[in-house]
Length: 471
Image 1 (tube, helix red, strand yellow):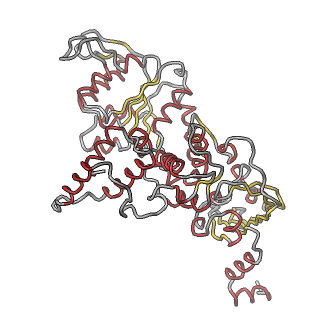
Image 2 (cartoon, rainbow, N blue to C red):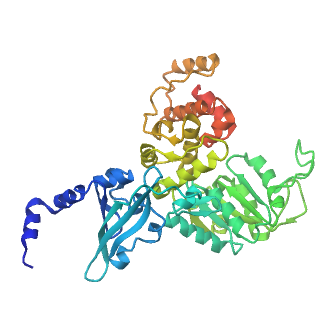
């Protein structure tokens, strides 16, 4: 095809440079371009100003990370119709606030009709729309499922799986990192099933010693061992007709694995010290953050039990793989914690929301909730600011000294004693942990129980770590 004057001119000045100059010539509008997978390949300075997301945070990400609205969750239309002409929308900026815009867009397809991307322009449409008098989760078009909120398609597909699986009695294994919501999914499965009127009981298999765990699961007869003054009904008996959730099931001893397999196969068990079999009708939902196949290969887990537990495996994605949910989770926890008497927050500052997005969240949703609780506790006013966030979330070096007075002279002495032992260096994670614990204690006003909840650990664990780290 013969190149015209425009093509020749673009060849001289550069097409990308010309596109950027055209976009920036409209300073009040958000101009961006997406590829065939709807990943952002261009984000104008006007888009940064209008929506609050910097280009470095959005480029390469799905377009819904930077341009979200209830209608957008159902598709924007340019792939199906080729263009959008002046459609009025309410977009959600980085601070969670609403921005009224009119949208213009044009899509491009190849010769076979496959969507290849498009250009979109968001023009401010008067003053920002007032916040609707509905919960924040609904405002962002998220789906709420028994306390789990998301707008991530993979998570919403898991909701469908849970609804379908709940109709049967098959065992379910929930895989996911710590803090990803494994127990929430187990509770959702129970609530969707015909067992919903029965009990839901849970136990963390890693938190109880093997000897005590057997008694907790199966119960014991009076006189079965020293101290057994009464007959104890275990979790299997008490969960009859309902659901029993076994968290961290990979931590079961091989002996207890054999007894659990018997319950799954025969629906009967014996109390510790008992001789009469007890029949139960219990659905087992288990969870682990480790691969059971790897545990089987290492001879730490029975292969036959693995197959009985994972009839239906459910894999929960970590929060870092569904960052599209971060704004709605922040809004959800701000609203939920505020209703419990915490500080009332009306908005999240853009720089704080950027910090929420930039942090990798190794502790997943639980850590995000703790970070919001921390922010509500330490800050003031109706806006959640960057300075309210925990140091590691806002990007402060966790190894920096913490300007907090030690709890007492005994703690100081312990710290000095340890400081004089260079042959016992701190582990690589201790500075981070020390900072997090000290900050949580400060935010909680020294209240151990509240600080433990903020950190996602038990009170005994927090006491032990304080003693170890000299806090």
